Image 1 (spheres, one colour):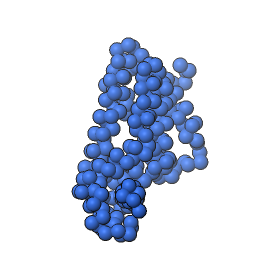
Image 2 (cartoon, helix red, strand yellow):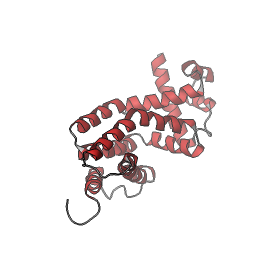
Image 3 (tube, helix red, strand yellow):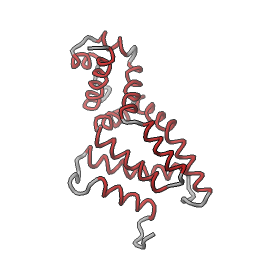
Image 4 (cartoon, helix red, strand yellow):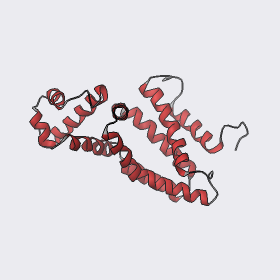
Length: 201
């Protein structure tokens, strides 16, 4: 196995075990055993556990195209398309839960254990995506297009709705067959833009 293939294998196994047992419940010895190698091989690719955690975040971001979807977000922001931007955020959150539920479970474990990877992930996302979107929302508020509140509140509203639904469906397996993601995205965005009043906007 080439060095790159071995690194990829170790990351996949680490993500799988961490998502099932958490960080506290998983040892490098278990990761090595699952990969059929010695612990020394792990530390040849990842000098420290910190390097392994960082590599997991980088691996997930590259796998799910964070840079690509941020470029998509820029298109909506440049066009002043608030609805399109919010739809993209909701869609990407649902897509992440649907295509890589292991990573979402891993992050829940990390948060519950107070693990540094949870803070690392939050800081990474805030730095790469959150600040730009917050700036955009603040500008749109100055233009009178969005509700005048702390921009973080709007981000929490958009992301929180999608996150809660995704966890219900893909982590707890509740109501899996009741609605399609497309139906829920349409409804979420309509409610986000119009509120819950019966009068159409």
